[in-house]
Image 1: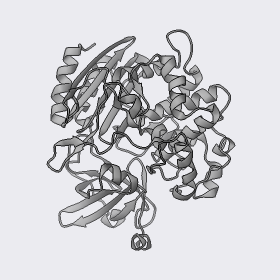
Image 2: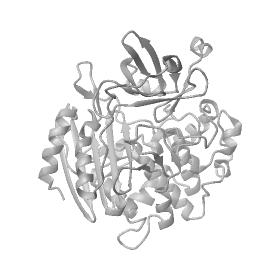
Image 3: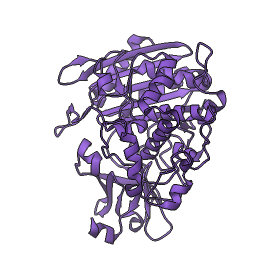
Image 4: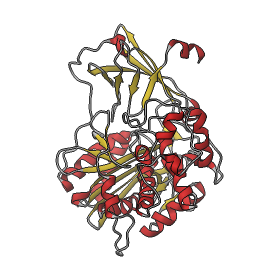
Length: 460
């Protein structure tokens, strides 16, 4: 077990290299937890980060939402394979056939197939999630038939949040507090800014024009996106208390249950293979990302909000878990510490982060060149004298929150139908191209972007 002093020294070293203003890490083995924090919560105030400081955990929240959903399964209120309309009769998507078919299971494992990057603000009221779900009828285009493939879908988890609200009669936030936070006895959890402000809480930071970290323009994202990860904040140690309940297969220390053993195990069972770089696993369960690294099975999730990033890795068979929370910079430049801890404590061989090949394979540029877009991003692949480039820009609501800077990066083939960023540090994104014609129809980068046809480009 590492000492707090070792964790602090190693984290400080790596956080400095990564440009991270403040970070908190916790390591749990069995019932023992060791934690450390470095840096500041806010570069403007210089307020120091501590082990009880709150950081937004982003999409790790999806595992909390899944826990609520599986509690409803335990209570006989929800069937994962029944259409969502069984519980939300007014549920609509742009594609009516898809809306009739979508199930909670498909939402939990990101195979529902509709547009997932919908970040419009639907207000701060208790009806925020309900309003977002109602908007899906006009903005949630169908990318592929339900169940066909994996495509990370934030709006699907917001839809699940609405199912939780309807079946419990509570707001999503109240359900989290009454059904998870209180049973676990967590003291350092906040659902929103008004709860965060009474504790030591991190402020997000983004890279400024000169590369330095500057405060993000907003504290958190809209309330409608809370179930998918827009607002929930915890300390690293409380996040591991939550993970410990899953390590114990739903059993709490007092003998009561957060989840049935069957539901806790079901969350860890592969549901769908994912397209990606392998570093983030090859399959997805119910809520959990499943990693097929050599050694013991690993579950986990990553998260990101505006200027904050989080990482959770759990080795249930060894009772080992690690949580890393940051408020800016490049979280994946701290990856070596995660590799070291899981290797030493759990015997897991965490793979190196992928890098461009020294001898790239040949790729048909005609197949990949073109524009691809979702509601939140536009990506253009172009062929130049020096090779292929990728130009990306945020769109819509996310551009208003995080900026719409146009960024061009050199990309290198890693297969006949995939590219990797050819520069940068940390985890370099991999872009896979799908389709049977002369040109790819889809760009898959964890989530699907459709090719922008000429008529669509002209209309835009």
